[in-house]
Amino acid sequence: MTTENPRSAGVRPRPYQPQMSVWWWLSKRSYLVFVLRELSSVFVAWTVVFLLLLVRAVARGDGAYQDFLAWAANPVVILVNVVAFAFVILHTVTWFALTPQAVPARLRGQRVPPSLIVASQYVAWAALSAFVVWLVVGD
Amino acid sequence: MSDTIALDVARYRPGQDTEPSVQRYDVPLRKDWVVLDGLNYIKDELDGTLTYRWSCRMGICGSCGMTVNGEPRLTCATFLADYTPGPVRIEPLENFPVLRDLVVEIDDFLRKLQTLKPWIVRDTEKLVSEGEYLQTPQELDEYRQYSMCINCMLCYSACPVYGLDPEFVGPAAIALAQRYNLDSRDEGAQDRLDVLIHPDGLWGCTFVGECTRVCPKHVDPAGAIQRYKLTAAMESVKAFLLPRGAR
Image 1: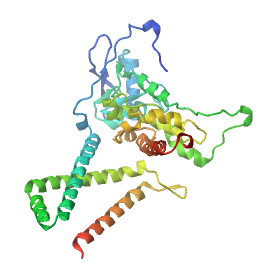
Image 2: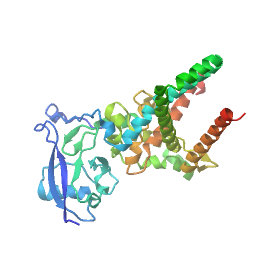
Image 3: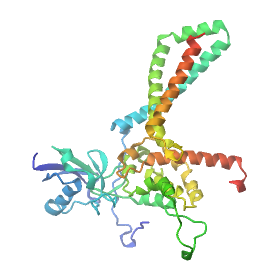
Image 4: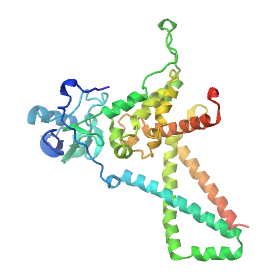
């Protein structure tokens, strides 16, 4: 532990205190990707709200469902959803890539290779997506 | 290959300057010279007033960390030849107060590290006559990676959370807490938990991941923090559900 030398107390010159720029997140690509990843959670929330509105409309009957479809076809809503989709993809891909670091899984005492953890998430994603497609398009 | 390279070095003279300025020096460019060799050349041959920290020049002491062309680097492990034709910008580590030229104040880090008890804590110490605390190679593997930390603070320099919130405990201190938490001989995890689950502890981390990218010893502080978040969350659930004695 460093303590101030009493002989230099009061005469020690002030250090320079650097200030972080408000634009720090533009200074490096990795910072920018991080900030976009954080921002993506807003669009994930929006996607959840949109889905809940859809479920509510379906529950309320055909009229409400048709109204919802008409609202969802509004160019502004379509634009928001296109942007939201891009951010949700970014969210998914970046978090999948980070998972092995956060969860160092072990199988029979051996560390599971990071690539396998990432790959298994994509497999689960594909399987779930296929199930949803079957649910919507299939009989 | 030109035989010299320009170094743009940040200078700050406390008591005289209000903010750092840049001074250019031309140093010989040799293929086996690192940035630190360039600085030593300046100090010995060109300008004895330049101030910077260094010691071992072999990536062990962790004192020569600086910002080279905007990236936190150990200057003893950063070759000048990789920056041709230059100039190479050399600044102090970011996110720390600058004492003089390239020397930063590290008291904050040392104080935080101390609060996490980075040593083996035992409830009762064994007598020397009882022998060593034995450990299997598997138990060693659990924490070995985190024990490679050399306290160079490049991770603090790279961490925007620490830059924005100086109260944040920071990457290396948490990784070193994990180094002891995961050590089979240690019994201090509960002591460290109180500091780590504080709002300025590990929950400040938003997993930017830069600490891991810049770490010269491949400690992976970001991984250590995320792993500990899981442990801390489990402990909080236990504290909520179980009576005090059963934890």
